[in-house]
Amino acid sequence: MHNWWHYGLYSIEAGAHDRAVAVYDAALHNARSEGLAMELLDASALLWRLYLAGDARPERWTVLADAWAARADRAHYSFNDAHAVMAYVGAGRIADAEALITDREKWAALTHDGVTNVGMTTGIGLPVCRALVAFGRGRYAETVELLVPIRRHLNRLGGSHAQRDAIQKTLVEASLRAGRHDLARTLIGERVNLRPSSPYNRFKQAELADALGRSDDAAIARERAAAGTATILAAWGR
Picture: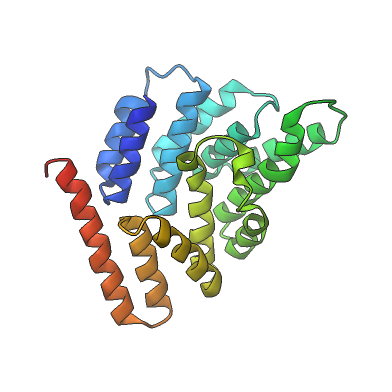
């Protein structure tokens, strides 16, 4: 199932949102899903990327948020908490997201000798969850302020680089929406240096150039994004 999630991410990279949603419906979350944490993590992480791209898919968020709520998980892994918050925010259930955060704050304040999730929760998990809620409320500057201090320490949250990239993309999007152009330039430049053929990275480069009034640079970035998309589609035989 997780390999299908990666395929869904490539679909989003290529701008093929409907294909990504088809993958979601067929392989990630549907009426036959058992509510296992791994499947809900993949489902949240894919829908969140669509959410960041302005493609909300509210009907799927509602079902997914219900599935997270049905688990009624205790504080054992802050990585899971962050993805539950994504689902609540995506479904517009901010109160549920804040209730989870409050519960984890109370839990972390207790004594837990030798429990590694305490440090993960207080140092990384709670700031990420608060940032996701801030983003959902349209408080993009607050999202930036919460994520910038921890952006180089997100490995402590758990998961893979690909999974944690949902948080990094949240910071990129928040910096653009907050008008933090210098920060956005740094973040996008780092991404382009790592993956120069990524359509997402080049489209964000174009978006920043537009915001700065640099239409020629924006056009070049979009040409490079289109080339990256063509490479992905060619790999699919299209």
